[in-house]
Amino acid sequence: MNVPRNVVAIGIDHGRLVAVLASIGERVKVKKWHTATVPADIDAKDAVAFGRWLGAELDRTGLGKGKLLISVPRGEVVLKRLRLPRAEESELAGMVQLQMTRQLTMASEGAAIDFVAINNAEAVAGTTTESVSVLAAAIPGERINWYRAVAKAAGCKIERLGLQASGVCALLADVSQRHTGPILGVSVGFGSVEFAVVEHGQLVFVRAADIGLGGEGGEAALVERVSVEVKRTWMSYRVGEGSAEIEAVVIPGEGELAEDIGRRCGEALEMPWKLAPMPPALELADRMRPADHLVAAPLLGLLSESVMGRPSLDFAHPRKAPDLAAARRQRVLAASLGLIVLGGAVYMAGSISLGSLRERVAAEKKRSEKLQAQYAEYLKEDAKLNHMRQWTSAEIDWLGHIRWLSDAMPDPRLAQLDQLGGRMGAEVVFTPKSGGYDPKGWQLRHGAGFTLEGKTKGREVANQLRARLVDSEIYKLETRGADVPDKFGFELTSTRVKPEEEPPKSRVATKPSAKSREIAESQKTEEAQR
Image (tube, rainbow, N blue to C red):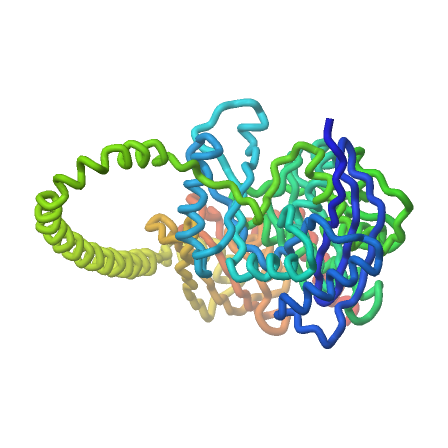
């Protein structure tokens, strides 16, 4: 049986503090909550000053000083979705640490890196795969030190540093399990809005926008801004690897504003929307105001995670690879006495060997740099060659098109072609693969255009010619210049390199098709009106 303990969950959002006091045992019982504006004379970068104010605020409101659960916003965290070989969690920790260290643009010293596994489609179906997807997150060391300094100055201890979007995911987990595909959660704060994609109860994508309840224009303007950002989020998610069709928009909150946001987002994405109910593990002492419910929703979700048995991110206690060398170190220490006796000889031999190895390392490093430069030059030349090949491969069967158009013309006694012009449009397009160069990613888009101008014995002959070209489905036709009875001018475009194999067999006027008759009737009506 779990002994209840008091935890204060806090979130800091653009100069606003949101705090929730809860007792965590078999269930999460929320006792109090409080929101406050950080005084203007307190520098947010000064962790000690901010922490002292936070401690005083917790005392003044009766929330008390104890263990803190701090919500970390999306803007402070680097998130990466990685695919790794399937292994034990302890082994995955080492692989995640290595991959994130390679990809981070910030200093890796002191950075806290944690991860949670993502059940992909194969895992959900119950099949075994050779790889596993994980959502890895990293927060800079200087930001970790800031949170620790704030907690120390406030007289509190950090129990957990959790990702704010993880709390949103916890509130949407039950709703997500009732959908076959992912859902999109929208969490509204004072100064920012976070959009979280949840699939099979797990967080797979997060995006934040600097809009919120404290912005200009009131709630109506906020609803419109959120509807714009939710569409951008949907587009950002769809271009990512492993994305699926989002089935619904879900708002973790209640009240008229939450309904307006959900309805507008649903209209923007043309999909259903709903409000997320409170999880069964959460119990509120009093009913929250709708605005407080919206901004406190991520904190309520983070508090609920501890009793829901969900894997979660914790930057205060990140997962670490086991120390596999501990037993070896003990054996080395036991044998150290014997090694001291032989140390002199080993040192001399080792010095010589080390010098040789250093030379080899330096030589291999230079060789590696040279090969990398050569490979980069090769890719550049390959790209030039493929671009040139695609460009020079553009060709149009001009004689075939001219023959087809000539055969399509009416009898020379009825119409004469005065001018025939042709042009070709070509474009070489490259599509990268997984963000890198792919020699097969080159494509050629080209087509032909023709200009026909001439004279006819009457409008009906020109109409029949126009209908014959339209019915062929080889060309897209547009009329060129003024439409007069004794002349015709057409602009033709075609995406075909060669026209159809069987062009019109007769030069004489044939029985017009239904579309031809429709065009002729239209022209006669215009003449009658003139």
